[in-house]
Length: 356
Image (cartoon, rainbow, N blue to C red; front, top):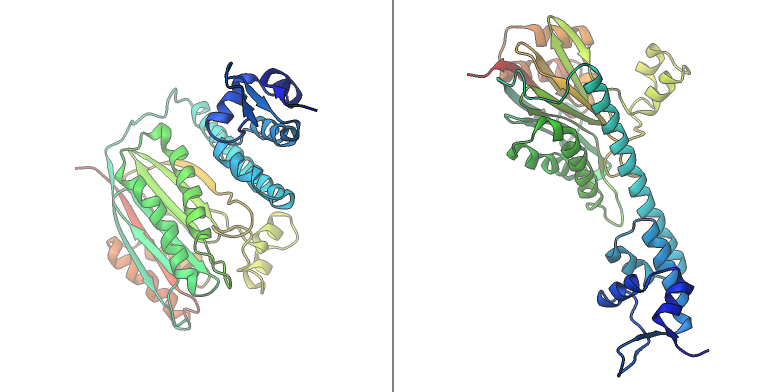
């Protein structure tokens, strides 16, 4: 069989001549020959399998640059690449679906838009980390800025400290941008994906570090909460302490399914086993929420080095005391050390105040 005209080849490959001309221009699917007089592109029938693969990958929405890479792989490696791409698409779609649900819930509460009403608030905050009394190194990261609060708990070897720092660093650019409240969750979700990629990039032949992450980003009076793992966020409002996050641990999953009660979970030997973390397993699925900050609120973000050893009532007492964030952070760390501090301790305390 001789060379095929672009029209015949397009029909056989289930592509359009326009698409074939584009793929030629970008070097993805170059014709076997070009007629010197007419300039018509001619294709070898042996190119049909690649052309059909390109057509199918385009139907998946795969970018041309990624398709070029896939087409250069052997079949087994190409299958792995397509699987990884679709996993990413599925994770991004799930994140957008959660964001859509949050926006619908917000608008259903009566707001026509996510406005900047009651925007005259600010935060006074402090962060602290302590190695504890058992560990010989610190793998936690705590950050407190005027708009971003974050705690991360790294693990799995020497890369844990780098993983927690990388996760927090991936969110810091958000604090430098004037983020409209309507875009807040979308931008945070994107930053979490960046954080996950940054942590995965720290992998070595011997180790893949992972990290938890809990963070709050302020825009006007809106606070975007993002959470992965077993670091926690608490809110003290009108004297009542509320836990805003749910641990992504194996034990918590058993509690949710009714297989363990809370007392059993508190002492279970696998209570620290994570089912979600940045850098580990499948593409990360973060919990996202939007809250309205009120003057008088006090937020606590912490690693399990604090929450796992200090009683909830003692946390509330420390947070309710009339002390500034710096003193409260020191008090919380001392409470954990008084309980033996078997793990690193990281915490952030932030007070919401009326802006001057």
